[in-house]
Length: 229
Image (cartoon, rainbow, N blue to C red; front, side, top):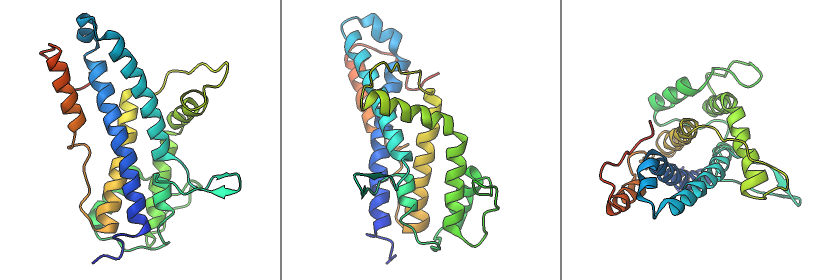
């Protein structure tokens, strides 16, 4: 039995999955409403409800993206809180941990990493966790502006409704999907390549989206668009 099962890393990675699950559902509901907005509007009666639901999904998406990419280690009232974020999972690893699936690990680092850390120092070939951390930092740096926009929206509007703050347009749906897919790839990598368990693929388990499609059909919408154009 792999010693990583039922470890702190395992539980944190499951917590990350829960955040990703909520994000996936909010993205799917938002997608179906946006893709079918014109026909929903023509139906009349549900226009206001679906308009509200779409706005609510934007709030949920922003909050959950922030949860997934939150940096662990912040302090509040002298207490340190551990997080079920990507950074929280990374901080649970030891400096060197065996990789059970090197092909999957190398593929992730090649896809998302730059081969160096944030200071331009080449990633060490014999330190798996450092290489993984550098790949995560590289991705976050690439989308730093977009992640800051989500954080600003969360802090000043979704969570606290700061006086005189007017929310700017958030990043596109495509960016939201890219951020989700990175989080999903990270979760699956940790599950399979480090913990040694079969991960849940949220991109193939879309029950909420399928259920919502049934609701739209019941409203008399026959040709339902399942994806944004």
